[in-house]
Figure 1 (cartoon, one colour):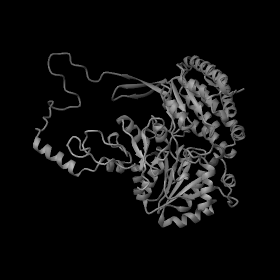
Figure 2 (cartoon, rainbow, N blue to C red; figure 1 turned 180 degrees about the horizontal axis):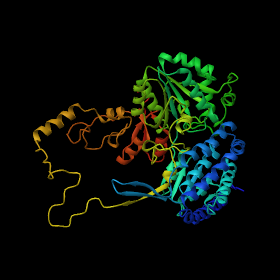
Figure 3 (cartoon, rainbow, N blue to C red; figure 1 turned 90 degrees about the horizontal axis):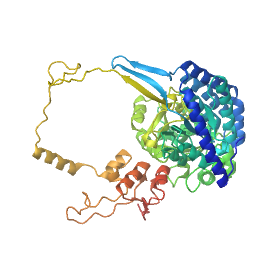
Figure 4 (cartoon, helix red, strand yellow; figure 1 turned 60 degrees about the vertical axis):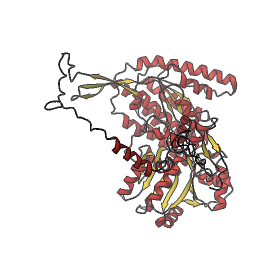
Amino acid sequence: MVDATEGADGDARSVADAARQAARAAGAQRLLGELSQARTDAIVDAMARAAEDHAEALAAAAVDETGYGVVADKVRKNLFAARDVHAFIRPMTTVGVIARHAERRVVEIAEPFGPVAAIVPSTNPTSTAIYKLLIALKARCAIVLSPHPAARSCITRTAELLAAAARAAGAPEGSISWLTTVTVAGTQALMRQREISVILATGGLGLVRAAYSAGKPAYGVGPGNAPAYIERSADVAKAVRDIVAGKAFDNGLLCSSENAVIVDAAIAEEVRRTFRAAGGHFLNEAERAAVAAALVTPQRLPRPDLVGRSALEIARRAGIDAPPGTRVLIAPLTGVGRDHPLSIEKLCPVLAFYEVADWRAACERCKEILGYGGMGHTMAIHSRNDAVILEFGLQKPAFRIVVNSPTTHGSIGMTTGLDPALTLGCGGLGGNITSDNISPRHLLNVKRLAYELRPLSTGAGPPAASPRQSGPARTARPPALQPARLAARIDGFLGTAPTNEARGRESGAATAAGSPGAAPPSGSPGTGKAAGVEPAAPRGPAAFVCEADVRGALDAGRPIRIDRRTIVTPAARDLAAGRDVLLEIDGGGR
């Protein structure tokens, strides 16, 4: 039985429960670390069979408890975790020697990371629980689940079923545990317990940040807001079919589901016709305003009561008429940011729709969308032009660029060759430690036996030449410094180089010294103070502010000037909250 009592008493019991479960996991960890590969695999096999056997019942329980999503799609996600993830991790060697590098004389040995604190969301509760339990036990790591309060019963049932299967196959008691009293305070306490070695956090931005501040290694997931670009050479029918399938899958609950469509103007009308035939309803201006008001809060977050609802239900709640059979609502937009509420990540079947001149304009629009919540996560390109596809791979700030497939299915490895996973790292761009799809490899430490290759010389003479060198050792002599030539090159650079502001626009992110809207430092080039001239007028408001800009401004101790037109990403606002770094000015005339 799971208790979710509110208030101080519930918090106290949840915190105490976190301490008990972490200690229990630590006791099991000592025994898990001694298991053989064969025993480990037998345990994981039994867990996967239990998950597969109960996939339908757990899916129905998740929809019944949360009200989110579609039972048939949740069955498919449960089976993806139980079958596809299991098939991928089954051949992995996670015990003992995992690699021998004969040329370098290095032997690698797997070591479990240790007890895992796993935060499980309400949007994909049972599939995420199955996935995290499987990868943890494959790495011989004990695991404690912290269920989302809105999905505590179905998550707990999942854990009970897989724990029973694991015990029957020889897993130590306490290898799988879960909080029985669930509060935010208890979850935070669990992540900070001394016995916990690593955190797997899936949830909202605040929870992921709490995981990263818990003082433990953590794998967190940032927001999605995935754009999908349909380039003029694309197979339009397939592209539209993929996007509708991805966005309607489980009513858009995966964070990698499509959130915006960008279309070349040359094929825009064909794309609109194809969307309508596939169940897409284009919103007129009044309908778009009504859906935005119903779906998006003033803080530019999706309203929880419409998350994971069908397109027809959202239309009904917004007071608009959508044709029977509508699978997605499509909102034509002209911009990204606070003035365009439906440009946010939408965990439901609502798509933003943009028309652009060509792939270069699409490239910039995709960057804006990813910058407004989604940096480092996922996007898609539908094209038959390999040169354009490669340009997107080189230029886009996303670590999963799905080609000619739905982002929802492609990002998790269901329709692509990516590692099958339900936790997707967003790398440094998204404030995550990795850009990988998370697997048992991320829950292993690797010990290395390193044999001597080059004996250390102990004589008085010169060291022996490296075996890789042939002939006498040579020391390159650096070229002589020519001060006059160096000065001329510096003067030339300063006379022609773009400003910090221009360079920031070109790169998509400013450095700390050139953050958008930040005042230049006192006495620095450009202020005029060091040169004895009048200082330049204060710079105008920034056009775009992301999390990296806020970090740079905080490090430099300067504000970032913004106005009502400035696009500030949700992650940037979250980091700036209470820090007096975003300075609002009257820049409405810009």
